[in-house]
Length: 239
Image 1: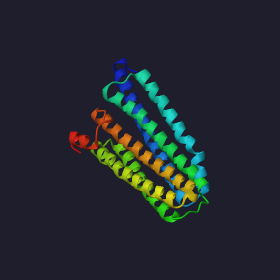
Image 2: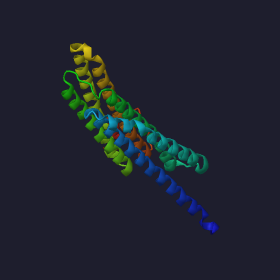
Image 3: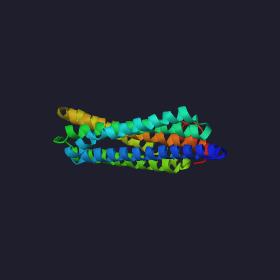
Image 4: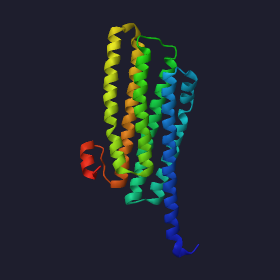
């Protein structure tokens, strides 16, 4: 190789490494999204086989996190990236942590789906519909988050992050109703408590998705917005 082209060659190879990492993060996010969707389906349709599949395959999300983290650490050590490239690697490391936790929450829901497969309690169908409605909101938020990450769309990321407030409100509403059911039918407390844990897992998935949206802002704008309100962020970037 011509020594005069060595620097350019290394630069292009580094770009390819970063792009590969980004693509693997997107793939990992897609896998976590499917885990959440399957876990929710298993719960609402009392499908123990699907729930057990989610539990068995959770290791795939974990393995991807470990692999991407190792390669990101390698890049930090060997390439010593600066400015935007450094933000890219740091955002990737933060993002895969949240995606892995999304996978963990999906596994929790799947375990509950197995435990509740034969459960029968007052208001079951109506409560499951409400849980599913919240779950669909969370899935939509997660899909939009991953799309924003692919496109590195800051304004869309801020709009998506705001939607987590709707999920929080739905969570509080569902929690209130389940608490009332516990008071009215204490003999079924265990089942109602299980649905509270499902709602809590869904709420946390929303939080992790919001975190990823904030990483998009950090990556593109170079601003740490973890302690910034959505209103302040919208004003700052004109979303």
